[in-house]
Length: 387
Image (cartoon, rainbow, N blue to C red; front, side, top):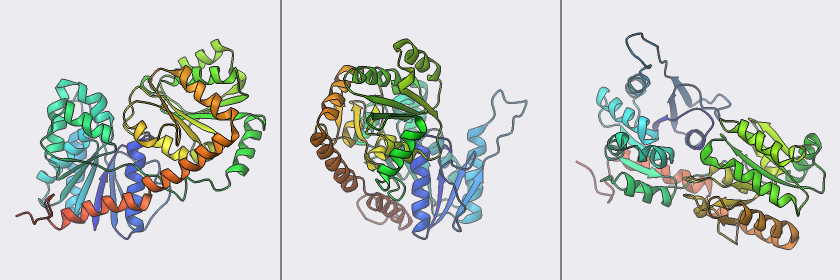
């Protein structure tokens, strides 16, 4: 099968999943073509059956803004025709699904299948902009198959966009060969020494693009409350527009010596293995892929009730879920967890068993592979042949 994939190549959940899916499809023998503005950041090596096609956006004086959407559509169309693609997978309804639909109309191959995956921002943020709702609906309804990464996101899409098409929930997954508990204690000890964290201290962690929606200030306050009762340190991985205000808050609270700003990291799995708990207290979150990665590496999660987080965490069984903004309750859960070693070990054990069962990489990749195969066979949703 020949598969085209379009995603944002920068750091973010949608780009991670798109890239990991492409890698797994290539390992299964399929030919994969990434079509984006640059090489996806998780695509670290060369592969015999993976190709990348960069979209060059020229800045013409006649346009106020560079015409990214038109240029991308043209590039996708070119790749469809040149490599005889069977299916294209668009990650985000806008602009990518719309670009894919236009590309199919532009190409000579009109029967190329289109799969669109909704990741969150295209619905939870852009879906509230009435000037974009029609475009999002168009992208969903004119794709052959639409998936979303959580039941919560599926429901919100129906409420905000009211598409006519069915949306199928297919959960995110992680590369289990990369995110696991292998050498966890060895890596933990090495990083503690590197960051000058005492052996006896618990480690809390968060990673994101540090936007307002991530509520990183609540994570800092959770840590501050927890540190009053528990010897602990906070490790923040990533960067973004809220970084300056977070540094200010850390300074105001007088906890600079126990908060570590580690910046962007190519090997984030080591930081997950360093961590005893992972915090994700977002105001909006379609799934929480970084949290799932951390869970696979052994970090017990504390999440907010936003979006799909509570679909990943089983409250009181594999982690804890608190209301958005309730950092004091989050701290209370952490204190109780860290004061009771038996409770922590039992919860960690339950967590590892649960994520490996519900978010198994091979099973989820097979779901996508079956969707591609159905399109290639020309089947409708009920299994009958399309005319």
